[in-house]
Length: 540
Ligand SMILES: C[S@@+](CC[C@H](N)C(=O)[O-])C[C@H]1O[C@@H](n2cnc3c(N)ncnc32)[C@H](O)[C@@H]1O
Image (spheres, helix red, strand yellow):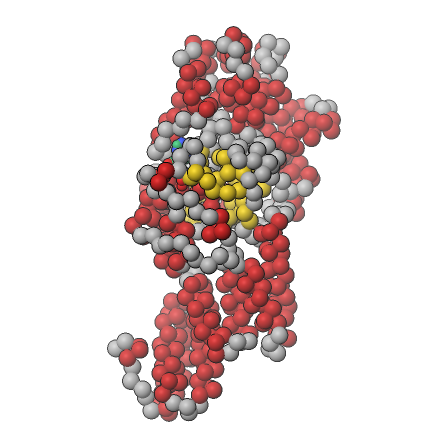
């Protein structure tokens, strides 16, 4: 029998039955059995509604019970991340009693979870006037402070991760608010839509902070088979589908994303749809599209243009971040991302001009054209960026073929790395390769440059005949933005020189560091990160 169809009972009998159901529901809530608690509260709510509709008898008492049951069901639903339905329960409860303390607290927490900081603040402020508040005022004040901090951060982007980094990432990562910086979605010359800078920004400037719709993380054993990754992927798809089923806004945001087909026909969304307080204004999407959307837009945390800070760095993680999904790939990217908890922070990896498209690299930009071509095909597109077009032409040169033989996986079978670099540098001089293009080629063979720069023996033999490390680093960073491996080379040299380079060189290293980690930390914290980088071994 459907709960709604249950007959009206004799008030005494009904009350007894409601007592039993309410006790069971409370017990389930205390035992944190959320699904069963939702089901049982739903039974109670139906009985309660039927009774209130039919009688004036004990009406205020019934209304009070209904209000509390709706609030408790909201609590259970929010634990199941069914925020949309939980909010409906809260609103219904608040219609009965507009200052119901427990409901206001529950609603405020849900709104905070949805990044709706201003509405959450209103809830907590209203709760503050409730006479029940005295016992829980500390808790409430904590939430009020949190809302104010998040409101400030989401307006200013003034995040500071310094203390967390200086404490060796101990404890929980800092709580982050969503932030939309000087960026806008427009039609892109690369493909479909892209994200563009709306003002000039310098390296390290924060462009956006966004929270994942869902993430799946796990420790993948070394030499794990494809199965382990497939299981994680399936769990990830289930999580995204679950989120989309529970929230119309999430479903609609996912519906804005590309499936890789006819991208140039897709609409360009207004930035306001990504702002947390915006009411849902976009059309819905079919759930069947979700798989194709995830194929095109899911990001792995541990990627070439990304850095995972904190304890997640031990895990393999795959997630969906909607706003970041509008960022196209470039082999000459100008942005990078930091992963902290469930958020990603995208920042400029070099200076960017107004109107320039923001790009990051979907795969390793410090790899030769042929490898990048293969990786972009795996992603389902053919990269035609300036760098790829230039290097496609260059790939026919003998010197390039030689260095390809001498570096990477073929190392040791080809000619000596120092000689290969020398030939490449000489070749660039003869072919009159200028400006950024030098950086493109050097970035492609960074591994070989790194090998020579970090070997005393090689430097003794080739150091005078090849370009100095600083110039090479500068041109590589200008071509592909800052990269941890490039920074490492500079840090190592700084240390080798016994910090002899002095303040100027330290400043240079810090600027490179900002390109990798952003400006979200004070100098001291950045220094300790650079220390870590200096001691880290990279697998090429
Ligand atoms: C995460 S989406 C990027 C945003 C997408 N352009 C849009 O309009 O929604 C990834 C897809 O964008 C396209 N794309 C990104 N970078 C590209 C590039 N460098 N060249 C060609 N297509 C690219 C490919 O279709 C890719 O599958």
